[in-house]
Amino acid sequence: MAAASSTFLQIENISKHYGDIQALKNVSFNIHQGEILGLIGPNGSGKTTLLEGITALMPVNNGKVYKHGSLLNPGNRRDEIFYLPDGILPYRDMPVSVALEFFRNLYGTETKQMNRIIGQLELGSVLHKKVRTLSKGYNRRYLLGIALLSSQPLLILDEPFDGLDLRQMLGVVHILQSVCSSGRSLLLSIHQLADAQRICHRFILLDEGRLLGRGTLDELRLQAGLSDGGLEEVFLALT
Image (cartoon, rainbow, N blue to C red; front, side, top):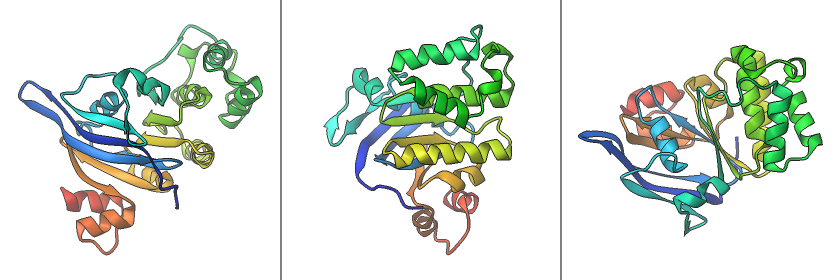
């Protein structure tokens, strides 16, 4: 799967420690314009800490973010990055339709685009329901709807396929690929390696706060000294 290669953001030497615990150690990588980049690592590897450091939701001890080579200060990152963390439920007591309309107005998105997103995510049947009553799958699609209503050039999504069955997941893959083809970039933190292989152009492998490898699957195989194999085999070979 080919992706655009011009660099949009440069992440340089992100480090974070909690006392004597090193949560991240000098993590550096680039995000290309129009690509889907997968952030891969086990629980506790530092994925969420890294995402919150990039978006400036959490202060880091070291590290900088550059946009097209120019320093992007923490206060300006929200203009370039939309971050959808895992485990949130905004406006839980509102009907889904009211909540989505709120975000449509907030981001200045056209109504026809919102209606298209609702159709793509198959949210029509739950628009009247309160957000807190949604099943896990519908909750995930509601959150993706909020992300897709945003206008920032980079979307960071934490576990975008969690709670989706295979058919729903494949539908969301198609939607995100369309977003990518329009020129936006995506950074996806994905737990299921098969899902990551299905959608991502390149990968960032993280373990215990350290960058194990970065690149396409072929490039990662080369780094791991493998002639074939998937992400699981590559990750195990690099640890």
